Image (cartoon, rainbow, N blue to C red; front, side):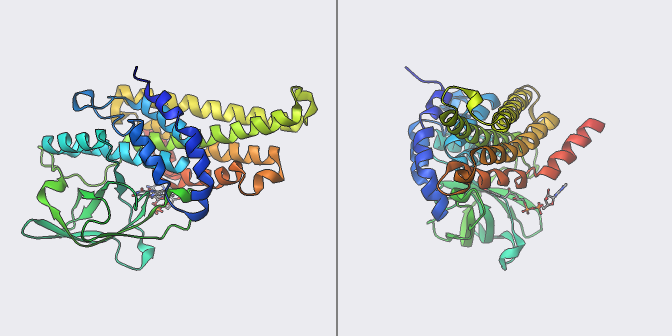
Length: 364
Ligand SMILES: Cc1cc2nc3c(=O)[nH]c(=O)nc-3n(C[C@H](O)[C@H](O)[C@H](O)COP(=O)(O)OP(=O)(O)OC[C@H]3O[C@@H](n4cnc5c(N)ncnc54)[C@H](O)[C@@H]3O)c2cc1C
């Protein structure tokens, strides 16, 4: 009997949560979580059935990602990167590339995303491509690459000699010319190990340039709705995890009689329940809109991300205040979730970019 993807994800919550404290402490990615994602056959979740995947749409992806985030928000982020990378491959890849890379994903290959350039690192930002006999030589760096040391490859943006941008599929680090530089000593999402990816004379063959598509248009950075949806789902998972912790702690204190705990604690719980439920409802609405309208679903997708990112911050704060000092001290899960929640608003679309998109859609 084949279990539904959400049920397969649900089994992973407890083992993911058990590893979260350790990887938060040392800012390493929980590589075991990736083995378990593969074993649960979730790496092919959104790959079309014809290519051997589950053929799941945005709603199933959003639900699975929420569940994964309840156990480990960093793993949910990486899962989002992987699914969004597959969407880019689906949109921009040549038929031969789609077939090969989709088969890789079904077999368990997990892709990271290397789009971001942080100019603060000292080196000139970005990856530069110089033409060579077999394709290109890549040099440079990408920053904030979630799971850089543990993923099985990347979809990366590359700057051509003429200043244009294209996307490339890179192998895992360890291939000649590809290394990771630890750089991720972050406030939260520490287990995402979003380190720097360095390229030194990496030989990119023609076959690993993503596209160009048949219409000749180049495949530079174009976010797809699944990024925003996955980041929203990660925030909903964080809110759900904090809420679960809050329920357990307050239930212990009330011993079956809600009147035993302070009214203010009950009201905080009610506010947290309401925020999480609203975030979840907007996420589902956005997933349905993405399924029916595709990339035209700008307003609902951005609204879901904006609301969920803010709701996670609110819910962890309510949980900490209601639980008290215990929740401020490691290794209480709410202490970690409080820090993890903050990342959502910084990730694309950032809080401001979401508002910009929603306002523009409203006035269109
Ligand atoms: C935990 C974590 C994991 C990450 N993982 C990855 C990864 O795996 N791969 C990857 O490529 N990147 C990753 N990133 C980077 C991320 O995707 C964003 O690119 C980055 O956090 C935001 O870019 P920036 O820091 O350059 O900010 P900027 O884009 O410089 O933004 C700075 C400020 O300006 C505002 N702003 C910028 N543009 C606009 C606009 N058009 N309209 C309105 N306001 C605007 C923003 O809202 C923000 O407040 C990760 C980031 C985090 C926090």
